[in-house]
Length: 157
Image 1: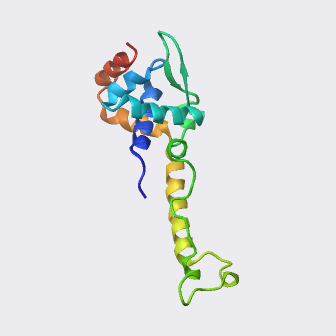
Image 2 (image 1 turned 90 degrees about the vertical axis):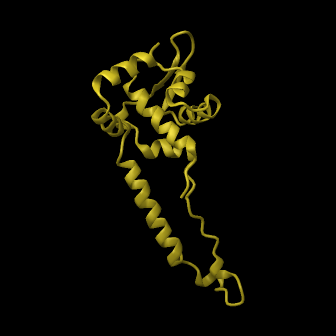
Image 3 (image 1 turned 180 degrees about the horizontal axis):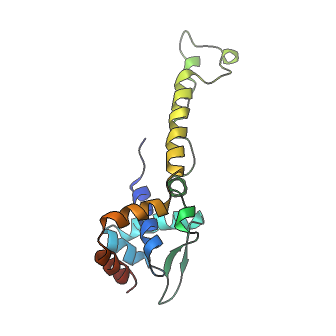
């Protein structure tokens, strides 16, 4: 499974927003992460469309989380950016070729489709079990408090 870079950026932005003292402008988020403003804007728009963040206009404007970080899962962010289509799409190739099975014998998913669905469900369950608050706590464990304060102050400039 391959996820777009925008997923990584969106998750990082949500973690930063969870610790910010107020709205953070998109250009500031892009500069903080050292990424393209244009491309990051697409991820922020996807988060906004999904209702995970909102933006405010004006001099004090920027992005904020719409819910507490403990109520936003990593899966929420992934689905906002990537959509909810399954990673594996069975094309029923077992019905093709000279020995293809007739459709009436293919009423249940084949073993390959079943194992792929199980793997994807496990992946989704894992992402759903991790919140932005969990990730922010992990960051707080490794970032010295004075550095975290300096980052929050920089973001609010």
